[in-house]
Structure formats: structure tokens, C-alpha cells
Length: 124
Image (tube, rainbow, N blue to C red; front, top):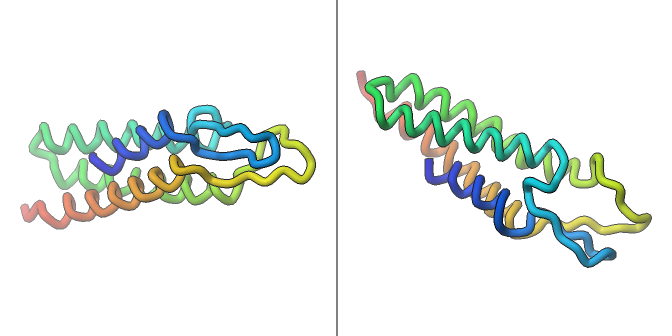
């Protein structure tokens, strides 16, 4: 849950991408499709983790949280590869990933590890 909360924070507050030539930055919710999918997956992982803590179906929600966090990690990586997709950029523009992207990557890995611990820790 903590890792997915970091991903949500990283998509909303710090800059996700920096455009060097234009000297502007974009937050995660401003980046088309890929980062928005990451934010939606982070919300689903938080909900799944909360339901796992609140109900007696910890293993079931742990597996759902693990699956969602692994997809979220893949989408964070895809946002780095496809960083110029769908954006009208100037010729010779350099797009660098900002601190929000790095925090989202770390949060996605922590969320995946939390999902693994939830599945392994429930010995029923």
C-alpha cells in the first residue's frame, strides 16, 4: 500500500518529465495515457491492499495487489521508453525523466515487494 501511495504522490506532485529545450516540466497526470494508466493502477493497488487488510481474504487480495503492482512497474518503465509518444515536441527536444518518475519507479517496486510479502505471509 505504501509503494502505491508513493506512485500516486509521484504522479501528482513532483515533475515527471522535463523538456530541456523548452525549459518546462510536466507532472504525471499531464503526460498522456502512459502515466495516467500508472496512476489508475496505483489507485487500484491501494484499494486492493486496503481490502486485503480489512477483510479475511488477505491472500486473494495479495495476489491481486501483486499483479497490479507488477503491471504498474511495467507501465512506469514503458513511460520512460515512450516519453515522447503523443506529445507535440519541438525538433531536437531532449526529454529527461524528472524526480517524480524515479519516485514512481521505486514506489512500484516497493508495491510489488509488498504484494509478495502479503502472499507469502498468509499461511492458510
